[in-house]
Structure formats: C-alpha cells, structure tokens
Length: 56
Image (cartoon, rainbow, N blue to C red; front, side, top):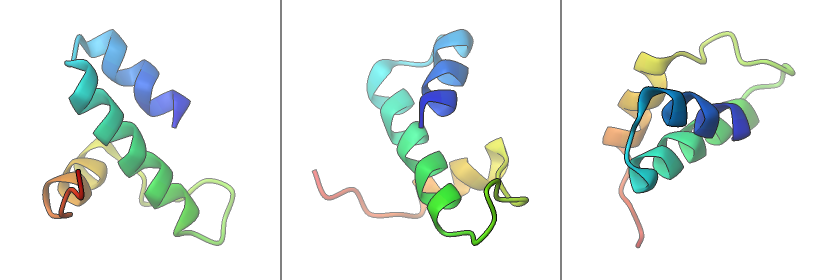
C-alpha cells in the first residue's frame, strides 16, 4: 500500500485517488499466493479500481 501511495505522490495524483490506487495495490497483493503478485501493474490496478464499486 505504501508503494502505491508513494507512486501516486510522485505523480502528483490527488490524495483521494492516491488512496484508492494504494488500496487496489494492496488488494492485488493479497489476492496472490506469492510475495509479489506478477500481475501487479499500473494498468491492472487502475482497471481494478475503476471496475470495483466504492462503498463510501
């Protein structure tokens, strides 16, 4: 999650979007049996975030 937040901060992304992106990174990481999910990419995280209903 911290790597996702740091990446968004470097890119100048708004905070709320940064948090959602970081949560997407965490979700993808936890969904994999490996330490590092080989499918983790900006495109895949963005797709996950865009296609997941926000409960807030």
